[in-house]
Length: 331
Image 1: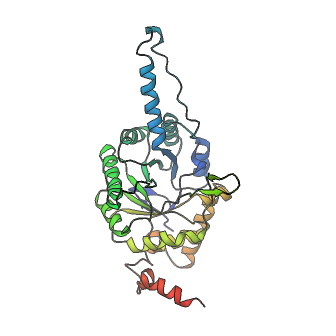
Image 2: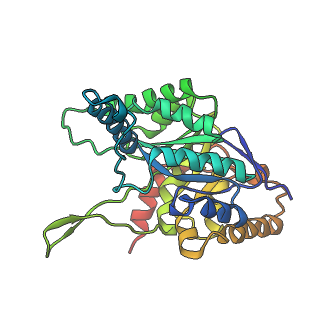
Image 3: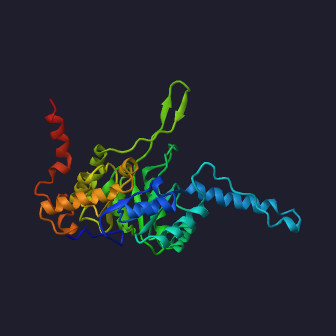
């Protein structure tokens, strides 16, 4: 049985990828993910703020030595990265060691806000040996004068800048919060995106009514969260040149199968691996293989997109009709 798939220009032995998580914060963790069966690993995210902090600290250190004695010009204060799990320099070192020590694609993750200021770092990530880069562009637009068009342009500018800076494939991990998501996906496809990952999962703050503070929260995903990305992958399959990566709500091989039937080229999971450990990937792949055997599928390509908008006999349930039927069916 052929489980191979092609995602963002990379040949994978099967479609299940370990997405960005604390499990990939160390070389040992990355090796455990590979040993557990992951076809590729997306490293934990490096934030744009970390890169800017390192650059700012270096400039400050250079300024401090302007009026010093020559003997002290080689002294630079250490950069404080206490708010983050690693520094940009350490991240590059991890990419390099992971690429040298594993036999699966290593995809670096950049979590960005602006469309510039970090493209040079993308180039350094390529030189460190990464197989690809996943751009995770997200910011809360608190400026009431920022338009939706400006937000969309930021995504397009970011993609074009990075694509111009590197030769390795570039994926974008997207939010569903665009007024016309299909058109946005088409623009990114035409701008050269090698993959679109649907959808980013945001961690919203909560309010503590005793301390009267805003509190960060973290809740692992569940299978019920897959419906939105499942629908959009089914709507986009076969209509774009770019690869489609599915993320959110993968608890078992059932979700992997559904995403592939909708048209995903690769399926990513984090929460399931955090709950059950890196070895759970092999369980997901075994479940997929068993289902394919039971239903007579000889390859991933045979089943991919079989229930997409382009291939189902009745596409209405993927559109507004499903909304109407669901509301009318409740008693």
